[in-house]
Image (cartoon, rainbow, N blue to C red):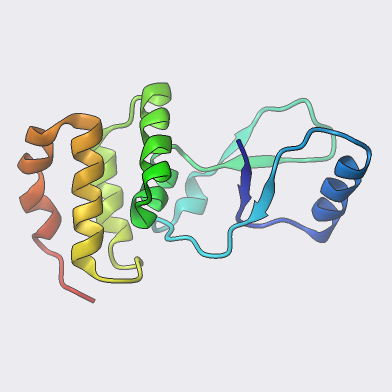
Length: 144
């Protein structure tokens, strides 16, 4: 529905403006002002295979945007997370690992991030699963 960019050159923004002026596709493009990103997510970026000659598009591995959206925790983010899960089948184990990688970088109260993460897990994998991993989320975690 839209593109949220982590990094883009001025040349890219000029091209976006040119396409818009010429009546090209109207896809909203935004620079991500703030993002709670998992540790070393950039090492997991994947090249999107498009038939473009002068543009390389890198996208995050699916579990990373799920953690980003979980940290924000708005209802439309949870809807997007469900869509991602339906499309790729997220791994609970990877999500828990990324949670631990991310928790020290998330601004705000640690408890809030834990609750948002548990809610996301309950929505994707069920209440029983969310309850079963509760100890894994609070153990070895200190408030920051």
